[in-house]
Image (cartoon, rainbow, N blue to C red; front, side, top):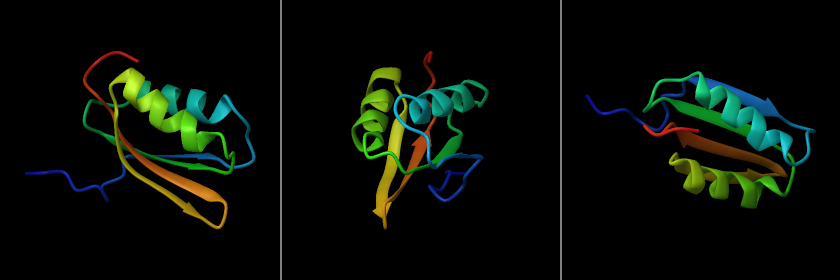
Length: 84
């Protein structure tokens, strides 16, 4: 059975928090999840638009989706098999 991108295992609401807190909170949540699990991050910090993709690439996670709707950034991240 293939996982769908809309199968969200955890939601991380970091609205109002500034860099580096959004990525640090995402990292902490992903650390407690099984590889292949999906987390949704909701952020308002504009720097997250650069920070989240960079974090995913460096840590071996898959950025499934990134959206900006009215200043609220939404990211879907699949936890990778490697370390954090």
